[in-house]
Length: 122
Picture 1 (tube, rainbow, N blue to C red):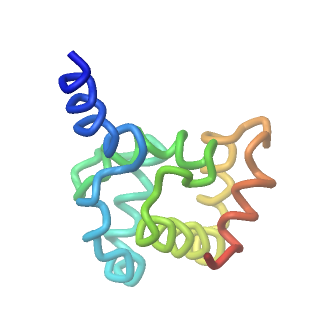
Picture 2 (cartoon, one colour):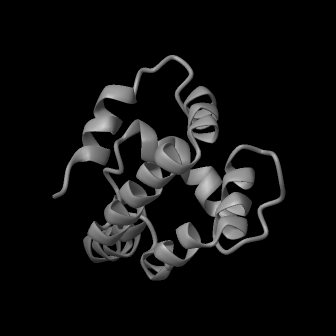
């Protein structure tokens, strides 16, 4: 019985403790450099368009948790990619950035911690 419990915990731990490593392979620099592709991701996240670009539907589901926990389950690569994306969004698309804030943190309850995460460089 104990062996079965240990096996289940060992199998489930990566899913509970972190996001899938397939997201580590996403080329965020390519997305940020391609305005049409970046717009497609933004539109998916803001429910303004479909979620047909790679992993966009997944990201839309994960985004509330990523913001609420300041990317606590993110791998180092995922943290870097989230930071790049948020910085690019706030600099290149401030109106969309404000819409993200209104949608994903309407009361501003995560803003201080999430901003500290975005500005960090661990």
